Image 1 (cartoon, rainbow, N blue to C red):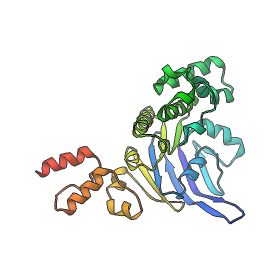
Image 2 (image 1 turned 120 degrees about the horizontal axis):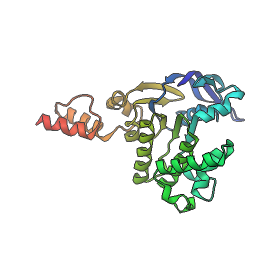
Image 3 (image 1 turned 30 degrees about the horizontal axis):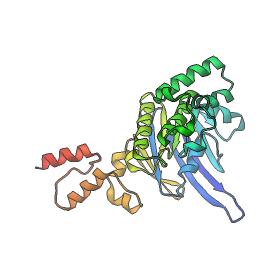
Image 4 (image 1 turned 90 degrees about the horizontal axis):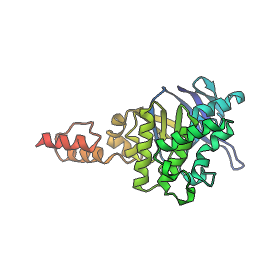
Length: 274
């Protein structure tokens, strides 16, 4: 479980202080899949770095499975609970061979070699990359590299995985591969926090946070968030295509349900509409 209490983060510099997070409060239960969206500068990535103590609060608290991240003695235990996957896989890969890269975090934890071998093999199998274990990461596609980064987190066996815009630099095929992997991890019981600019991806979550100017201004299900097309547009967001098309058709006189989110739902509503 994650609990955030009045979290505030201020970046200090010679040119002046910048408030990146401004009094945030929320909780995330074990096993939830939460997407976080927001325009550039809204505080999404700053918040992501607080989940595994890469950043510490300026004020307030964040607790990871009861561990206060601001307590120095808790930092390594927090990081054993929370894995991170970032947007640029090239910045995360540190070894010259795929299987060595997946093993890197385990070696730093001092895991015995036999268990490292077992965990690496299981992790590569989980992301369908076993056939590439002897490859140089430089020979892989962007989507494959991101799957290797995810394998490294799977091998760590963390209970929580934070994805900070993991598909931002990928082509559509790579994006699909990564999102499928994320959904499988959630189905296995992992707590997923997924930061994205792609609304179609955020719509796959159970819950969506909308951030603006360092605050969470909306918290609801994808259906609650994305079918409020007018409000999302006002905030500067796109919405899933089906939700926007349904809204346009309503304005033209079609009698459609108000909470259409997916293409399948829209097709069924149009069929019934005759």
